[in-house]
Length: 148
Image (cartoon, rainbow, N blue to C red; front, top):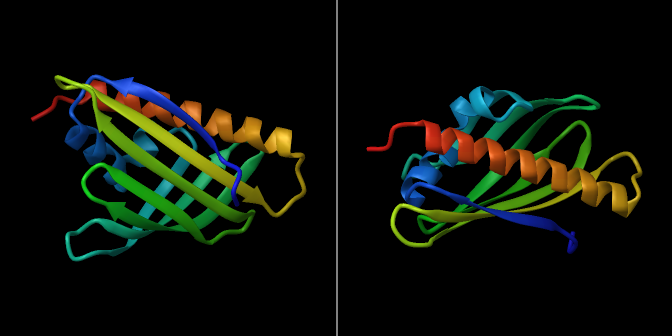
């Protein structure tokens, strides 16, 4: 899965506040749009999710899948597919970079492989739509929640 799609956005909040929203899987149905259910199946010794079951409804794509999460420091989280009904692979990363004051650049990288055949161009376009929606939703959620 070498090919991936990525995009970045600036969020008016500190990296810890952004990561707090990313790590709060139970609230994903409130702001992501496509995620209808989220259930943390396993956590690490710091209480961070290691496996999460997500039920998606993105119009033509409906899926129930489990992702494994890897936390790198305080500003990066990656995930990969454990099991799915529709997907062969799903690898992604959120990487946060502080850019001064309470501002964070968030980069989202994603590579998806579906069980049904799709042209590479269509797959990249779908990844781009997923990323752009996720980043816009994340920005709106983080900036609308009062920060500590």
